[in-house]
Image (tube, rainbow, N blue to C red; front, side, top):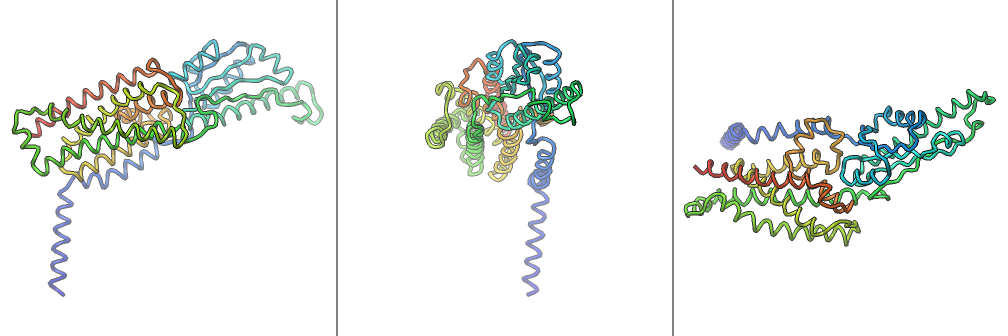
Length: 383
């Protein structure tokens, strides 16, 4: 019994020493929960304030300006653009520069007097949380402004008892139109982003595991004993994974459209070409991870942390506009951030390359940078 206890104590001490020597594991054990806590505490918000908003004021009267100021004072809407027509608002939404649009009719003051003023509010249905916040905020602001005007009317006319009912109906009604996703179906919002999440996770894990596994069993050194260069080795490993990822795109996109009924409104060929660019960037990121990780366990730890950042900071679920600048900067380092905008633009909005060429260019530069960095890091590690 005593010998068994001694053996157990010896094993406990051995495992404790190994755990304390593995600093990377300790950093993951203590660092990851703290990172998650701060991300959920500061970066994740389901209520979206300061929604980028375009205004079409066809009246330009004190009454219309007061209504616009009431929207701004609610802190839900930030007037970022002043346009001339409803079509211009739709174009700005297609480009992703605004998430809401307000159209005030030319006879707004007259309609206020007669009690039938109608303000058109357009919301971007491809951004679920912005729609929910904007929908509620627009209704509340219009109602509160109507109550204020009605109270002023009661004061001027001296209505008996001062009741709102005696002053007539509410002078302002808001007609809210949700573009791209009029029924507010969550699947239409989440599916284009989930496809990108699946592709990135698979590409990063496969690329990293492939290299690390060969390093562990010793075949990597045998390959590099030949005239093969590190960049050639990296490209050779990427191409089969690239083909596999394209097949996965077809499967996931087909299921989303034909099984779950999510409409595909844009160009399929453009979507596939830009997906290819995104996959190449993700594979390059995975190869870069393989130059950092020493074994498959560390690959799993790093990719787990990357997945958490991707779920929280790329706009997959939570709106990036509600995040602080530091969280947005971290999200900018992940290729999924750019592909989500591309995927939602093509699938949900049906827009073309002219509206998100900047995101495509970033993915191209990102892929080149991570592959070149991985090649140099790979060479230095082998040396």
